[in-house]
Length: 133
Image (cartoon, rainbow, N blue to C red; front, side, top):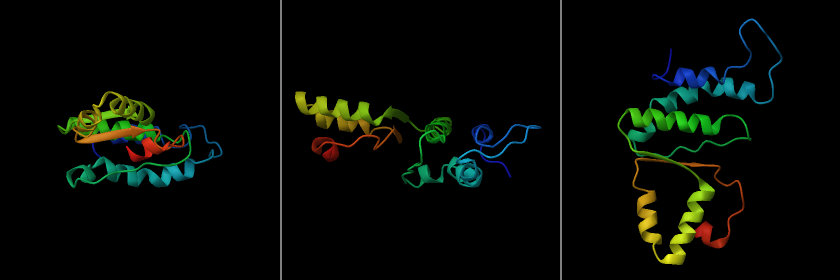
């Protein structure tokens, strides 16, 4: 059974090994293989239509950003508005809003899209203002 159009391409990048060239699985590949069904399920976008959030987490280099961007692309293809940004950039922008008293306007713009993808969330410790934002 295949997932929605486009998710098979994402999953191809997650499959361990190359055709005709078997090798020992690298760190995390077994997890990626088992997660394929879950990724296909996310690709159905039921979470979007139900107004739910999705959090992708795991070690560096396993494809979280790639999967998030693919899900965002699928959402756009279904007519959703999507914004992708690095969390550090969003927090810096919100900090600027505190400085020039435009924080409320900036937060409204931030949450306007149907899907907001925050990349590299919690990669750094947040200061008190960032945690409140």
